[in-house]
Image (cartoon, rainbow, N blue to C red):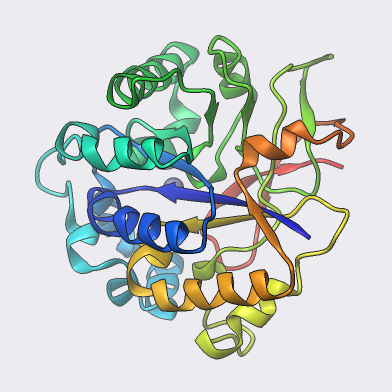
Length: 294
Ligand SMILES: [Zn+2]
């Protein structure tokens, strides 16, 4: 059984504390994964203002967000623009790259992308991608060959702008198999490797799910012969739920599971379909995410 491991890094705190912890654990188990970094300003605390929305407040309380993410993440960037993560913590990103993990772009400004993508024109989308790629390449000293949209929010405009970068693949949506996304009548030649499994914050606190049955539930999604991609967050699995994540790794490895970076999945001769990217609301997550159409 193969599992692609995607690690999203959204914040300054996740980069500073979560990534080093994950690197240590992955080295211990001799695992290579794909890290998608947010390198620009950390304004994620601005999500706090969205507490005025009842659905968001409920999600925060259900998943015990302050305990899960830390209060400093929740208020970061609320008063003035947050720190430029890549400028403050380049050594963390460099270390991940030097240890042989795949390095990709998650965001320049995660908050802005996640909340304002619908209002952005093509130029703004390109500029955000360019700013992120430029700083990430400067830090890692290598070309950036993959990207993953923040909060799985991707539009046709995003796909077209991403084509201007030499990405070997993107991981922008949820779905079940690798595919070439179709825009208008033509396929975009950068394949999508979708996340196939739910995330911790989507699942926990709903339908009787808690930390003691979570890993067994995750395992139930993994099947041989199909695409299996798990997304974890440096802010969660790297910090407050690190023990739970270690337990998952042990459980999967003990069943002869093999964990690989997403780029490695492309090297196998797995068939690549064509599909559109649609929007869908999924249980436990606020707002829409991009989804593989078929
Ligand atoms: Zn993210």
